[in-house]
Image 1 (spheres, rainbow, N blue to C red):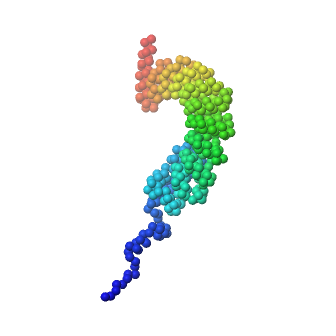
Image 2: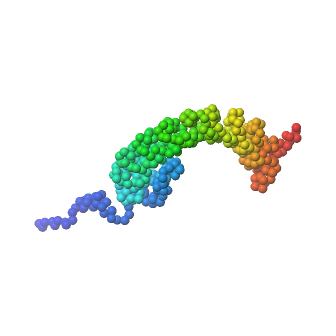
Image 3: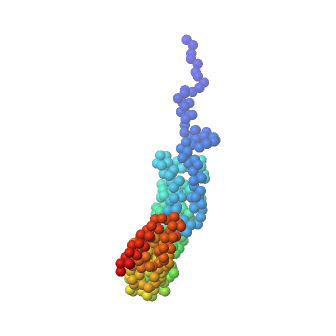
Length: 394
């Protein structure tokens, strides 16, 4: 019986096993055009990251970065692709991403610092991380990622840190990050740190910065104004105590507090000899803060301008308009009736027309007709008729 001839080819299963080995396929496809299927979500992403790249290349100051929301917004196109991609493929797949799309490497690493992805950062070679020229420590501090901050500083030895790191930590009230940066870095902070901490009511941060940094009286005064504007009474009281109770000739603090109707703040500042300007009563009237207007009238001598009644009228604060007319002698601007009518503040308009304040009603009616604002003209006509009838009855 003749013997069977052996095939010169190995069994199909063995051949398939070799041909479909992942390492062999990677070696073959590395010399072909195109990208891996797993990287398709990143195709065309470079164009969407232009704003992010510009932001990361600019000096990280609160002026340039505006606030943390602008940074978050800039990262969004990358974040929306990366996060679901990590969930499906894992962080180890970034090596393939970096090999095929090297232009994305630095922004992906920056995203890891900003989003607190320590797992991804810690598996990368230290030299690769050190080569990233973006301010990675600033990015980690911006969102309070302490573990990432420590890793980049102590393990990687990355130098991407500026005063922005402590500034933004103070803005967020993150005392732990502020303490770490103070203990382990020498960049310090700018005046923005204590101003933002005061504005946001972070008393412990304000106290720490004042204790450990040579802040000027000017920067403390700016912080006090910020605290007064946002009604951070405990912060303002602390700063006043540190500055002393002579008021330092400043008027901005009470003006800022009055603009927002913070009467308790006004009283505290007044007790410590802080001054104000006519802006205080003007702005309080504009916002209808009648209690503040009355207190300033009783306890201060600066008074107000004609704009107090004018702005109150335009915004429809009838009680404030009535009180100013009765208790103050400044009067109101000639534009008061016009603006109140165009704002359709009809109860205020009726009061102004009755007392013949802030302009001539018939002139405003003519203007309304010329502007094709029949509703305003009709409203004024009705009020004129009512007030003339009322006056004729006396």
